[in-house]
Length: 265
Image 1 (cartoon, helix red, strand yellow):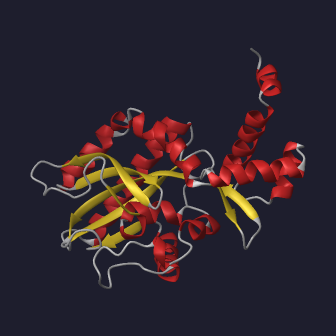
Image 2: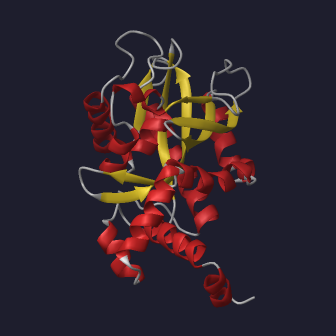
Image 3: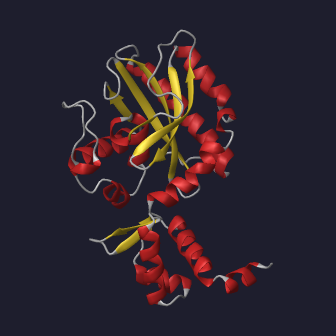
């Protein structure tokens, strides 16, 4: 059956997919009027479809800006192929050299709602066990991987993910927790300025991590790759070496998965 025939027989499904494709390719959330204009659809139809997709989590409505963006259900669906694909083999040799050379632990994670889901772990021989085992989920604001992903997202998307204090998990009950959007924004702005994400003791006492995002062809963060090490065990020069290795590995993943190299900056 031709694509046009399928669309004619299921117009609502076809229009829904058109909207999702448009939002997926946009640099940020779009007004409903722009969606209708670009797709040549009636505004009433667009509003109805957006409402249905919002109800099911595939679209999020940024009320203050009167714009719509991809919801977490759509984002998680795109990440499903990442978690099910043979990612363990991509950049594996480079990751192994990195963790073995410095006796560290490395991991790759993907966004899962307001958490990161760890899909690959690689530890050097003799390295201490980490909490970031495969299939473990941890709050994005507290992990270097989560911070790397959030820092690469549009600000409006991050705000929509964390609209109030209820969205923040209190893991420690002390100053290590991030409980307000303003606190998270400061951390993410520092991450952008630094060029990579860091965390110290936010997940496990005595351990620090650095991370960089893996970007797709739209510069959207689809994953993060990180290295965890004992606090104060690496000199600034060694941290710089680790970060450079992470960036090269992230480039390899981006190129292999999406046919593009991560933009340098």
